[in-house]
Image 1 (tube, rainbow, N blue to C red):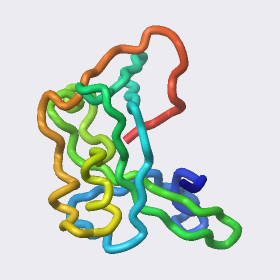
Image 2 (image 1 turned 180 degrees about the horizontal axis):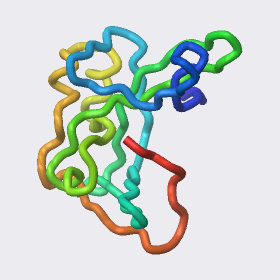
Image 3 (image 1 turned 135 degrees about the vertical axis):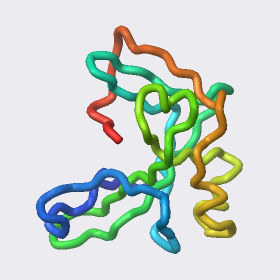
Image 4 (image 1 turned 60 degrees about the horizontal axis):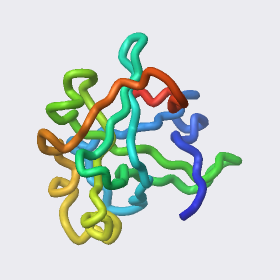
Amino acid sequence: MVEATWGSNPRFSDGASYRFVRSEGKSFPSHRCLMPATEFQMSVKDRCYRVRLDDGNFFYLAGVWEPPMADYPLAFRIVTVAANAEVSRFQDRHGAIILRRQVMRWLDRSVPETELLGTPPARLFVIDEITSGPRQPAFVL
């Protein structure tokens, strides 16, 4: 595990730091990485929701990393896919979910991206509204 900054180097993208990259039509032949997660959160208007796997397991978000450049540290972006049935009621996209059994397939590129970066099946997630407690900082897709 290494610590990295979430978002691309703004110096090379007209001052914007991109935190996500769409999977459609893209190939990720190198610089693949994973972010471990137990949930992700969505904000819709004034409400916040927690999204977890139905079986309670942790998972990974597929990502790509960028080397340090021009005084900007090691960085990563999360690869996104079209939202599955549960999440699509709230937003159009979410991070690409890599299950524990798929980790090495993503990292060693032993299968094509299309086999891992599809929209997850229905009933994979449980979504709960967060009414109190800590909330994750802005995580907008």
